[in-house]
Length: 278
Image (cartoon, rainbow, N blue to C red; front, side):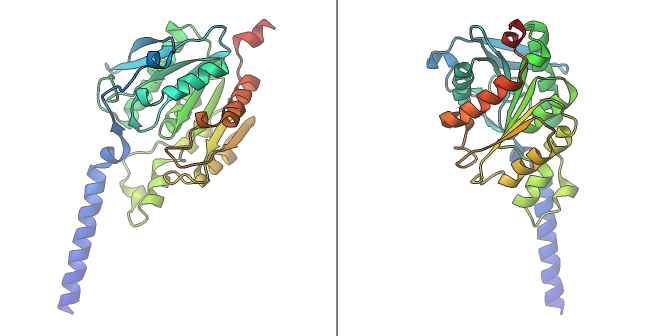
């Protein structure tokens, strides 16, 4: 009996130690920033300019502004939790092909942006880049499409719930961090210890613009049902695009038909300058 009690105490202590370790190291499980830029849009034949954007709490964000002639509108791109903007240049090429300007930026702590990433910090970053488009680039809110990929999804949705963009697109996005973590770590009391929310679903309930959602049934990191649930909760007009491939190789830009589906939805629902001129 004493041996069983000691074994139970040992297992309980080991479990509590694991829970404490997960609690204290959550930032390292959420953010995987790369400070080194591996390439630039110019290396892919894209005209661009580097931009520096100040946040309300004193950080400086680095980004790339890629304009196109006679643009139909502008995409504000929110990337995922790993790497930096130099790993998303294929999206710049795609949006140029579709006829849209793009602002691609790094969150605090990523690439050449200052600071350390945090949930509240990424929301401040979102507000700063939104103001840059409105006040510096002089783009009307209804001409802006917010595109969030993976972790960028809840950040884009958070912004869309507080501003009035023309459109919101979410690719490979989860409903919330606790929901996703519960599936990854079913043996942990995730909802009690999670220090992150990134609640896409909650933000989506306040989003009034058209919503485009893309997800793959083969996504091994963010299960397909997350995308399905987001689509179910989104208000009309909305569109669901079924991708193919894993989380890190099932990108919208990879197939012409996927690009066409996104471009058609954007052309139909974004209040672009070309629409106003007709």
